[in-house]
Every structure is written in C-alpha cells, then in structure tokens.
Image 1: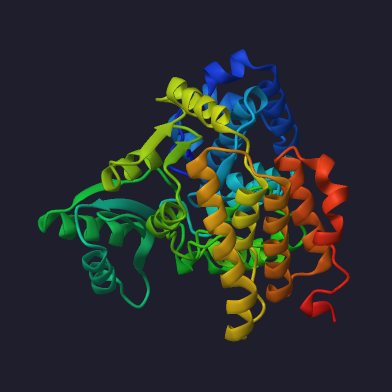
Image 2: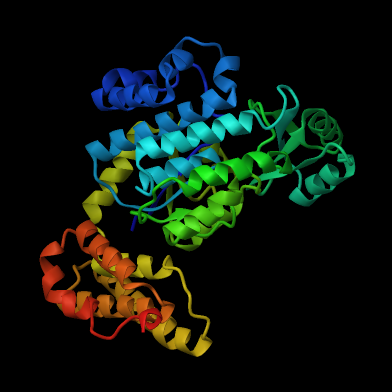
Length: 425
C-alpha cells in the first residue's frame, strides 16, 4: 500500500526564474501569484524572474516566493489528481506551507503570516551579521561541541537544523560561523555556506519571535485536513491551540528534521514527494534511506504523477484506515494508564488487526467493519477527553474523505452516543 508524505522546503532553495514554466502553463497558478502580489504590495514575480539572486535571497523576498511557489505546486497537482497524503511536513518556512495545504490557514492569512515572519526575521540583526552553514560528514555531537567552543559572551552559534545522520546546519554570528566552518573542515567536514541573510533558529531571534507570536494569535486556524508534523518536537499536530503553541517557539528552536522523517517512516510512509524549488529535502532522504522512494517536483514530475496514479488505483482510504490515523493523531488529555489501556490501546489494536486483514485479503470493508472502526474511534475520543465539537468535525472528515457520506446518518447513533465525552460530564 502506498503511503505518501508531502515535504515542503524552506529558505535557501530559492533561485531566479523558479516556477516560470508552471506559472506560464497554469491560469490557476498565475491567479495565485496575482493574489500574492496584491497582498504583498509589490511584484513578487518580477523579483523572481528579473531581479538578481542577492535580492531574491533577502528573507523578506525569499520566504514569500518559496511559500507561494510551493503552495502553487500543491494546488496544481491537487486540481489535476485527488490523492491521499498520509502526512505533510515542512522544513522551517515549509511548515507554514504544509499547514496551509492542510487547510489550517487560508492562503491569504498564511501569506500575511509569512510576510510578517520574513520581515521581522530580516530585521532581527544588522545586514551581514548573521550566517548559516551546512556541515556534512560529522556526528552532530562534534558540531555541537564546536559551536559551544567558539561561542563567547557576546556572539554565539548553535545547531539550527538536524537534517540527517551526517548533516546539521549551524547558525549565528557570521564571523563565528566562518571560524567553525574552518575548524570543522580540518577534521573532515564538508562545509557549505547557505544563501540566507539572518541567523535563523537561534536566540538572536528572540525579540522577533515575541513579535511574531502576536501575529500568530490573531490568525484564524481550522482543523487539519491531513496530519502535519511539527519542526519543534517532530510530532504531529492535534488541534489549532497546539499548533499555535509550537509555532510560538518555532523561530528560535532547532528544526528536528531527521526525527520528523523517522516518525513518518515508523507510521508506514514509503513514498516522499517534495513540492517546491530544487530538491534539497529529497537528497537528504536518499542519503539516509536509499530504500524509500523520494521524488522532487522539479526533477521527477512524471514519476510523481505515476505514483499518484498508482495510489489512487489501489483504492480510496477506508473508514478503517482513516479512523486509525485519526486515533493516533488525536491529542490525549487523560493520563490514567488503566483507562488509556482499556479505552485506547486495546480497541486500537483490534481495529489495526482488522485493517491488516482487509489489506491482506484485498477487499472492501463491510458495514459491520465500518461500525467497529467507528466504535473504536468513539472509545478513543471519550478516553482522551476530546470535545464533542472536535469529535463531530473528525467524524465528518472521515466520511467526506472516504466518499461514504451516505452512511453518515445510519452510523450517527454510534458516533454520537448519548454517553458524553469524559471531559464534558
């Protein structure tokens, strides 16, 4: 069974003329960029197509450009083929793209957030002060030790991204980044300065982060259409309040990208698709996990379309599979181990076994099996103390995605039993 994760890149992947072919061929994509220009108040496409790379690399230009292009790619594919991603994840800026594609944010609201984020991050330090560099070929602990060694009372550098088993990114004062690069190269590292103009994911952005928290608090959020993994702790988001909590510290926290990929692999993801400029995330994946299929939009468009066709030919997601996925990514607020074992673990394992059986037999789920899955999910909701409002949204999501809305009324007594959720008693 094909389980797809969509990946969205962050700053550093920008290049002049990116997206030109897609924009010229798609009226819908041109409309996205027109809306983008209206919100930004300047011609973003002119900077992408006509400006020099130094101008595009400035944070206030690079972040909206990558965000808009990545979002446009997703929308163009989604318009052509309705497929079923199991997870979405984005690297730094890309996390906002993932959340927008998962319909947590309206595009216009997300773009304003990205614009605000880019502006205050650019202004966090003086031009030329901050720098970042990729360090390849050394254990992360060695790089952490070097960062501590060269940092001093006034200036510092830290590990900002844990990208793969042999790549991390350091960030901070540009002068110290240069020193660390030279020292690490002497012990075998391959060092690459990054095309960024500020020290991202460091304490230098603390004031900017506080300013950005106000913008996040004022931005409407909706329930996730698909699970999205957080950069901060490499775990899936559960509901809007938790999204806000983690985004509040994302700017100053290290990006746990390797842990993010490992989490998705543990959940059975076997195909990763990168939507955005270049193929940095795809290349990282291939280094550590050569057995996993990984494609980038710009290098592997035909392969991506073939994989999507292959997935949709298998079958639509079942109520059983979607119930299992939602059971996993629903936030728990009940720490009674006995109740959790009986109300979550035991029913989940029962339906997991049913899902495995359906997959092995290659058949559709029966009405009785759908009912069993719904009963399991209801037990999980009650035990985890999920509000009735969220329960209704989740059940509606399942039947909409599986195209089985005609069963909704018949199964309503199971979904909305008279027994109230634990937290609403």
